[in-house]
Length: 283
Ligand code: SAM
Image (cartoon, rainbow, N blue to C red; front, side, top):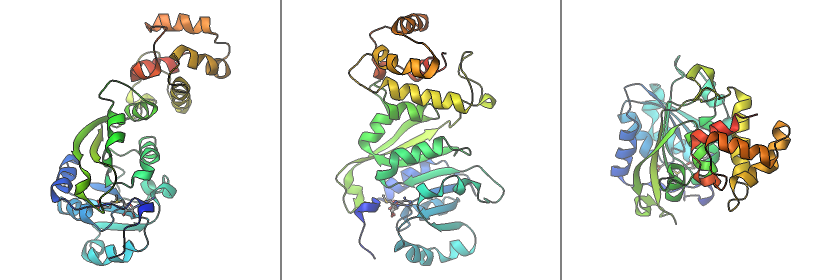
């Protein structure tokens, strides 16, 4: 067996209990399609197949491909497992548009390499064909930031919550992996995945704009809002509003804040998603 590569985030799950909990959180039906990122040595892959899923697994490490191909020879031959050698970040929308037995509904269930967590979640949630559910092992601190149980939002939590409802499945201590990583982990579930910027799914409120431009504007506004964390939101927005939407001096922002019932002194981290959607849909 090859050595684990740190650069590829290789910490293999060795706990059947945790593997079982990940699969259970996936709530799989027979023949449902699962995309697994980084099958590694196939521990989770095996459990997903045993739960009845059809798995498309993408592995970057060329040393693991022949091992997986041998271990899962039967499942590959009978079409239950498709093994792809590649970098999930380079495949782009290609992974969704490939023929999937006539279905474009899929779940992402994976113990992912942590160095791509943010970009990977963003890519799937903003993809044209979004997964119906994501169950992911992530670093514990990242899980806490995404869920924001302390009520403090961040660019990361808002970028997830705008598309999905995140929840904690379980905390996983480092001893459940080999080699033992330097951080603890957590399994999170992203459900109710939707596109709030699409008219098909209904806008969150009557003022909310729809489409790609509204989506871009939302991300521009949250980035600007969090640009200087210690500053008040109004000061952070002041700098970007004029460039983005004609004249928007501080006085205008004050009027807007009053209209939305926002305290002038509020900071970005204290504003919930709904309010960011309202803020980003103002001219
Ligand atoms: N699923 C296995 C398990 O639970 O034991 C392995 C998980 S390990 C944390 C992450 C896996 O992702 C490794 O097998 C690694 O080689 C693979 N990987 C790393 N970067 C990748 C990428 N960009 N695309 C696809 N796979 C990647």
